[in-house]
Length: 189
Ligand SMILES: Nc1nc2c(ncn2[C@@H]2O[C@H](COP(=O)(O)OP(=O)(O)OP(=O)(O)O)[C@@H](O)[C@H]2O)c(=O)[nH]1
Ligand SMILES: [Mg+2]
Image (tube, rainbow, N blue to C red):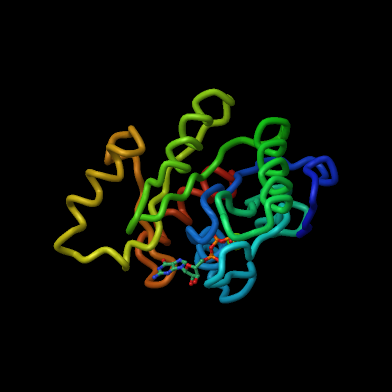
């Protein structure tokens, strides 16, 4: 629907969910999988593909029911000034956006949570925005390792394993279930 460098440039939403997570964790790929479109949101092997607050609106046009794709945090190779600008944009959006209802915090299921993910989760405890943890790249974890990985990831995030949804944008695992949950959150079902 719209891209913006500042949340104050966006109109008011009716329901607003934000997709948050480390650069390269698969935020934009998840949006594409949910929308069943290949390149609605720009994705890339190189971190730093998303540089603005990108709003995706559930149809019909003007419904005001949004998913907002954010730039990722922790892309160490970006110039420091850029990194700081993105960090400020994300932080201001998450702390000041009055119409934000909830964040989906994505953690790389194959490697996470990283220390930066843990910091983000801790920070969320203080900012009064409800969140749900989603583990991405389910297809990258060997089936024999999945049980242990699920336990470790939940312990690292300090949440109950049953509270974490696992998805694979690449293979479609968990996507219909998450799509249906998001439809409920957006009030379209
Ligand atoms: N194997 C696998 N790879 C994935 C999956 N989801 C995303 N990827 C890959 O991970 C890389 C990053 O994906 P993006 O969706 O661009 O990640 P992002 O979180 O939006 O990254 P930024 O915009 O930089 O913050 C791409 O090479 C994707 O193809 C998945 O479910 N499985
Ligand atoms: Mg992205």
